[in-house]
Length: 197
Image (cartoon, rainbow, N blue to C red; front, top):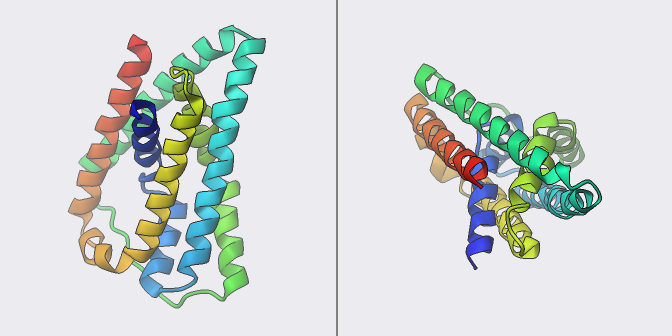
């Protein structure tokens, strides 16, 4: 259960960061446009990438024993930088997310979310590389992957369907500042755990 919860928390902390994909999901949720299909697409895409990271990274580390150690240090460095970026965004402020305009037709909307998901290099760093590196610290990789995948499903459907509740809050730059600072602290705590082993 501990490994599942770590996977859940890690997955959520990575996915909640402000990004183009999340902005699109939130916007579609505000417009109540194709929310289920978009949420399902994002969550299933994450599930595929999480499994690649958690299970492929483990096999590779058996073939190349140095790989897990390299991934651990790369993951820690990436998390520290990711946290710095979030902290800088929190200190700078000024970001606010506003939905505007009309929802797209179904296929153009799905094409947009596919591009935002699969053409984004950060999604590979977050799910395949970073979650793969963190999962190397646990013997029960299935539980870690299940937790991270659960986090994806919870997040995307909550974001899509809860968008109307969140809209007034995240129309204010201060809300994004608080969220970014929380993300920075979570990233740094995970990096510390990786460094300390």
